[in-house]
Image (tube, rainbow, N blue to C red; front, side, top):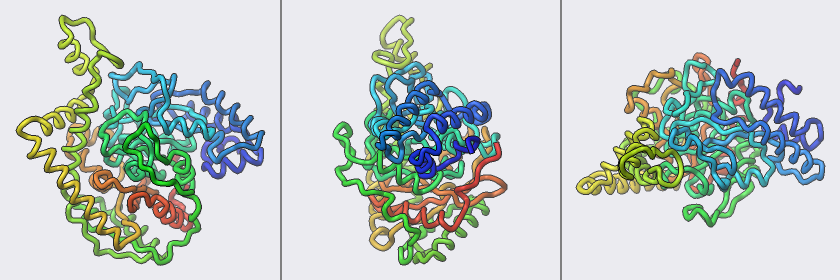
Length: 487
């Protein structure tokens, strides 16, 4: 059994830990052993924290022995390297922060440590979370565990690949335009982008502050609910975190979705979608019908086609403001051997940022500049309101909307690297959800020639419970989420 401990779900591991059938040290060591075995092929981690993890595991075992365990006590996890970890390097996969060691923990890290989580490593990402393939990391490209020549998705590619490859039981990522859901779909794991404001962003290295949201990667919907029970809730240090009460997300996972109304927006079945993806998603929707859901295939969200353009004005604009702080004067990389302060700031940004980050800073600075602000940024915000209103209108009729997570299966490394527009289109199904601020989850829904396909379920604001209920019901009658890569 010890050979397979790293493949357990959170709930299965918790039960074994509570019954003293295994220890957290054994569970953690199983994950660390597997990291040593598969990491040279997968390359999910920027930093491994083995000694810290084993110390946490010993502490967790003592807590369990006292009968004070939570469902996450002693469970090994990975954190995306944009979440500040006190005393542990946090790089955002950028040369700019290559040596940055935060003096504090992000709010979600605080909560998870308090719940007894064991941190085994920090995961690779597209630099500053800007990308859809993890090829934009300043350090290396992460590989998809199901096909090493293909991308794991992005920007949270390392977090998705790490769970898919059995390097940890769960992980956290961040999602600005699909950066949790798209890699979850590509790596055959569950990935949730919560409602904007549901999870504190304190300690998250910002990309686009009105879009960013932290969420979990897990092996099934129940595990996802267990993690959300811990990380959700208002935080006074984040002015955008919502004062909404946090329910027990595991309460209504009974497999019953009879009578639930599900809409299928036609705009998400885009031109260029791979036929295998179309077939798998429609098969999954029919399975929901068989479970008693009432499905309407004639839903329209017409402003969805504008979401890509809106996103690539708003997100770069916010990025250009957020990344202005990296000027070499306070923290991060600094090029000091220059003739003036201004030249030092220019050199710091020239050599500290990678090409995709520079591209987005330039896009955003242009959109915010005098003479173009009204034509681009202001107009994008108005269209954002239209998109949000269309979702609000749809949710007066439906409990949830269901779409593909991505129009394709994972693409080959390098295939889209020199074609930014083609790369941006890989998030076409996920971007509108961030713009509207509503929750979305991706769950495993099939394979095409051995490559994973994701199903996206979208809910009303703060209706994560509904997403878990539908996902859990689907997983009771399918086994896609139990498939593992042959590494």
